[in-house]
Length: 611
Ligand code: C2O
Ligand code: CU
Image (tube, rainbow, N blue to C red; front, side, top):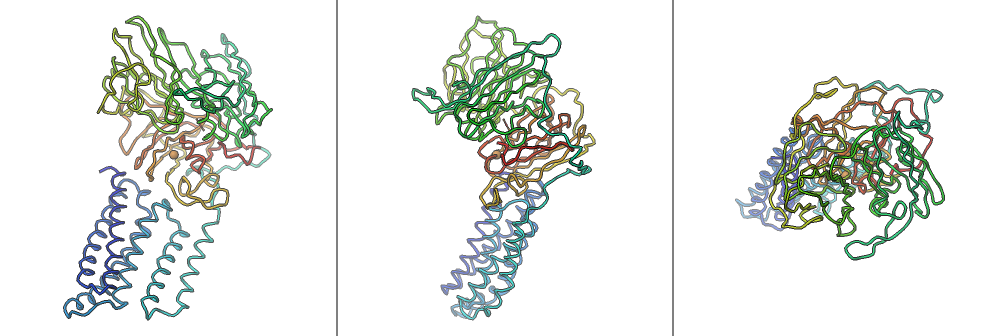
């Protein structure tokens, strides 16, 4: 059973346990001792099931079970045992003697066990990993107060002063919850805080101003402005670079210098340019509040970097990026040499219910012509692609060529938000069609059904990598992704969390230049999280405990689905301060983001959310 299924089963068992215990208490109160006894027995059984699922979850990773093991399991165990010991004999004798069996001693313990089970259901949904002392106190206090109130309502309850210690515990918990905690995570490595005087500002980490020998300068002027676009026969309000959606395609050859001057005409929320997947110098990265201030209407910023990575990339605004990218502030960046034959770039984007791919028709060419399709997912959710009418190869992922990619046919490709796939095939005599999520977006034909999804961690052939699963890492970071109540700008919200905290309260990861860094990302929630680190490509080591066994997989965005655990690694070779976030940009805006900072690098920019 997958971890995601176990999480679902565990929640279901907890729900049934809560219903069973509360039902038994209600039945006892209603003088139905026989029914109460039957429900008690059922509650005991599902409680035991729930204990089993918790243990199984711990097998998938401690993060999935920590709250169950340290808090909600023991709480339910103690309350359930008390209910069996106190209420059980009373209900039994009521059944035997034909008496009502609705004494508080029979009713209250059953209801309290129900409250404890309910806490076990709500805790993973509202709080999640990790269960901290503050949250343990608050939870126990809530169950305790509910129990005391029930007892008093049932009559013959304890005196009012018994509420005092329990309420005090709850208040201590709430107070502790507002403490901000550590703001730095050194990942087990040394915490070398440079004194302020020795720091280098991220604003000074700019790139070369000339192309490499033989390269040329590619100069672009972009003005971000409000505009409208036609999609599916409708006119839609949009924001575009130079009024175009997608923005002007940027193409360059290896060694060229790309220089883009960004102006903002009338985007009130401000705008930047972020080079997604391109490992530019930090000051060119376009992360507002981290590497620059957002460009306000009337302002400008010049971006400059050498095109030394070949492949398919894209750019987008990083200011209010959830809204900005959705509205159209994105475009493609392709660094050549161009492929022989037909070479088209297809940025996939969804406006309302319409998915557009930046081209009107499938490329036409004589049979035998090589074709390369560069798919770019500019949306916040994964898309499923299928190509009909030809066999093909997935030759590059996130800009990096795969080693020895095998021929594919009848396969479904799942492309994470922000990710890129390059497909290559030889033009056949018949028609080729491209499907996105079962809809033909280029060409025509019947939607393929039931095609298996390609597992890219097993595709292609292994090759040497500069480091691997067995390497000695200088630092290791663990990110547990979830939803829960967390402080966002001092206000508790139902946020998307990293290790139980929301941006900007997630501790900044500290690395030193040259470090080999391991990153483990676990998804405890019910949503998919496309994880994206700026400024570096990561090598996939493992997914769910299985080593990546195909071609080396260098990604800038990897899709951590519910219950999944990814282990990736990267070399800290690009000094700066970098965003590290979920590329479902709505999730990032609601807290699922943090910074990765190199020792000695400071940022003069503040207040921005980096995105
Ligand atoms: Cu494409 Cu920080 O994002
Ligand atoms: Cu997410």
